Image 1 (cartoon, rainbow, N blue to C red):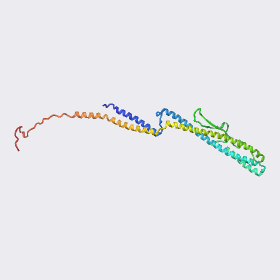
Image 2 (image 1 turned 60 degrees about the horizontal axis):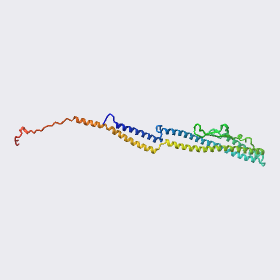
Image 3 (image 1 turned 90 degrees about the horizontal axis):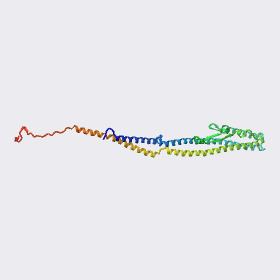
Length: 310
């Protein structure tokens, strides 16, 4: 029994500190939902998961780019659909005006007025159709200014861009700015020109549709890849709540036990005090003297003499 070093208390306290440290870690994991909150929890897992997070972020942005690209192309295609409708009506009007049964002064003049309004509408569509202030049908996106969509994560050497050119879809761009149906001869000439313009619009819509379809396929690939990488990152980074709760309960019990043992170990040196106290008490008690009892007769009567009766 020693009093200078309470080894049992030191050992119990070390266990208590270890259990409380583990208890706090489990509490942190349960609170955050992550099994890795710092590099010390899992250095290799942290490095892998952070790399996955960067890749997932890049893929998420590429997915957003694909969605924006699809919306842009749908906007352009929708506007060209209106242009298609107008050109088809203009083609019918040209055929109608070419008929000899109509007069130039009344019939063809009325048709020409409507024809010109349709041409103005085609110019308005080409000049005003935009997506986030990017004009789509005015010819500004042709040649070197073609639209480019970034559809891969931002990693050097892995860029993947989809591009599409959109020609000038105005009357001038379509070659119908000089068309007229004022006379039968002009109407006949306009028929072929307008049909050629319809073919140009159809070809342009075909290019837009092909790129849109490819972007849709790319979007599906990006979405699937993002989902799989997120699942992989989750296996590394996310905490298993059921498992962590069991560990938390274990270390909570162990901490309580260690606290009790620390108290018990600290109580052990008090036995030395009891031992010393008992020894001191025994040392202070004096030895009892032996006293011989002598019977003395009353009234100083000698021993053996008769005692008078009262």
